[in-house]
Image (tube, rainbow, N blue to C red; front, top):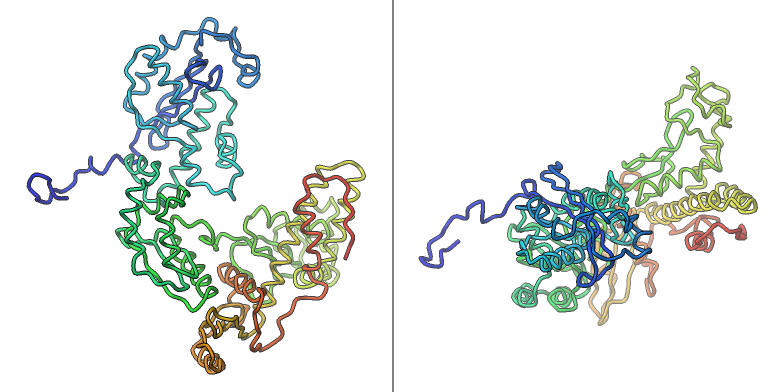
Length: 578
């Protein structure tokens, strides 16, 4: 970097780069108080934990006499009573030891303005100098690092439960500080993907990008095309930070530099962005497909959706003498009955439990021989047909596996009817919690079946050409092969579009048969194409085979699925079989 006095280049020192987060001493602090106003209420308890590199190096805990009665409602919440604090030291007596404990640390709190505000007011009343610490707020970090799809809110109890904290918050200062430590460590792990590596980076990450900096970076939106396509924000090392799509790249990118952009993670991304790459596409569908493929490949730190298709879960039937259901990350082999993919393993597990509730498929994981008996597990005494003991032949067992395959690819009634009857019986017996569990399993199964059958409808077609009227005239064309976009283009207005179609077919990518492309990332692409094909004004130009769904398939349970998904209790509901 150039010296201001001489203009010569000066090599930055390690100190200029900040302290690596693994070497920073954090002090996580939590307070209990008599109310919410720092200028009118007092502190009743302080709890703090010092950590560095994931290791606890010290704890601090003390009750504090607030010098005023504690409201009964506060006591009910925290368990701290007037009697407990009667002999406790005053805040003025406590602060010197707290200052000594906190010396040289970066302070951390969950909803830091509350805790730090009370401490600052206490320092002022005690006429002690404020230490001006660097403060990290785990609420701010969580808002930028944890998606709404992961947790419904950013409360400490919610985040502690989600991240598997070793201590649950109890509204006692030390317990809450310990829980916040685990939340902090989980959030710090996520910061690496945002290139936050030092304490200085962490301080910058928490700040909102100022208007002046937004204006300074508006030039990144210059000279971009007003056309459909994909845009990529890149950092100084040309690494992709965020990938998006729009029907007008220039207008969309300019919107990031307006005051209307309030998303915290986008402000953080703009702070790092140094250039924007534009990739023009023929139309909206091609842009969407390119975006999916690029996000799955590059995994930009500021993208959230579609980033890890390999983490999806499949429910498949194993290929063996006595088949069983299995959950797997790997897409199923050719000819294997399957459902999914599911966005979470928990949902896939619910769908598998739904099938087990309805069909006599074995649940043990042992590979069984059709000729040699194996050791029986506990399930053999709980209604299982016990193929491990050869109590059922391969031929007699086969209908259960065939029924699952038929339900996954066609009519799912063989699973739906038994579960509806069970929900009804449980509701009549007022066993509402159990009925709700079965309802959740049925909903998971139906969602998986609907998704599977919709994807298979397009995957089975070797080649399909469809068109949508283009803005300003002409047609937008898509060549789809086995559920994958193989070609895209636009025909000029007021001309015969068929030469454009023939040209696209000649240049379109070759796609292998459907049984070799069941990668979860491609399923997302297939679903995006299905959405486009089902939109208004689409014309089918040609298709190598019919595009169809089973007449008695899972889609006919759409109304039932909607009711299952929106039900908020397990009271008895009539679910007629379509």
